[in-house]
Length: 218
Length: 217
Image (cartoon, rainbow over all chains, first blue to last red; front, side, top):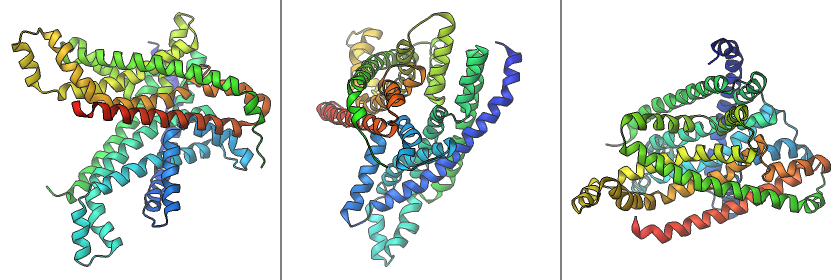
């Protein structure tokens, strides 16, 4: 192990790690809204809207994230969609993870016993009110865990953005390995940074979970 | 905005060759990750801590770092010692990655087989390893099918990432055609469709396999 080299490249890798955190957090944020939109579309009575949402989810989950990224970044300009690499990474990441998250959200809402919403409706709660004050608080704990797992997947997937030349952690690591020929040192450092990021996300999920579990009946 | 799919038609044989390479890689990785994952799981459950802790460390390491980073490490790391073709690095990299994910599943399913099975088998005269081989592992394997299927579907999609280290699979095969035809959108759409079709076929296969083995779970 070349410790001097490791000390030397650490600031570079930390700066790149911030880009990873930046891209991932923005993609998770927007992805959550995409997911909520998809869940909402699936509740429409007009069937083609539901089909659109189902089809979108199926196509996104059925094709590689990597190919989606290349399609939007390199193929986008020919349909008039010009994005800079970072925006493209956030955009594709959000629309990708949104499809997965919508399934997780739908699953957690469906896991709440239907008797709960029936009881609420018969007590005079409106549809929206039933959803907001009865179903969602009970679905929250499961939703946080399953959406959280996807947030971790997204952090790992964000490494693929290096292909469209965003200088994030994996890109920087690859460039440093290429220029120093010290794969072990660079890998150890960058892996450590990913592990720190992922454990931070896990910590946030755990905190949110503890807070949400108050509403679940024992 | 006008589309021209004629270069895709011209270079279709190249794309098909890419599908061939991707399938070959996927098959090799599936074999390596399932068999390897099972071996790793059995060893890490049934041996002492000196052996099992390093294995669990590697499972954890492969699961908490991105695939692409692992691929770069393997590509440059192995490249320092020996000259091996990219496709071998790709199979090894993807293989180790999914070996960790599969081992994680196998560890859970092996533990889910009740202790009574082990005790009954031992009392009938089977040895320790024979019990594991004939009694525990087959039951665990059947229980692992749903999650294993999910992993393999993810794995097939991840073969596209191997183009980053120069494995001549679908995406990589299209690079030259794209650079001479300037039609990235058309090519990537066709590639996406190909992956989608393969994915749907795999999902149908998985559903069939789950139905076939449901009564044993």
